[in-house]
Length: 98
View 1 (cartoon, rainbow, N blue to C red):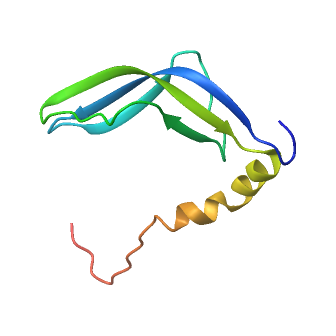
View 2 (cartoon, rainbow, N blue to C red):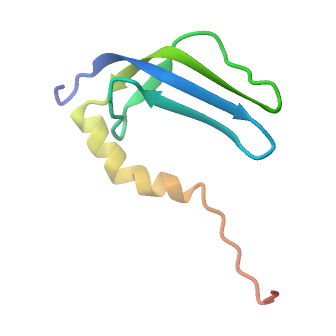
């Protein structure tokens, strides 16, 4: 990985989609122990997975990891906190209720 070049890595993965009342989630686990760093992009190959209500669907797939260049990784680390703050919503009120 260079300062301006990107590397591409392929990794086997397991995708778990849950569409239950208790839990609505999608998890991806790399089966070879690959780790995603700031600025990296992950694309899972294959058709869309739709889990019917009340079920959990687990499938083995292949993921393509596009590794960020050193410049992109540094930029992501420097600006990441600002982007996370955009997701926060703060509310201040004078009334206190318990």
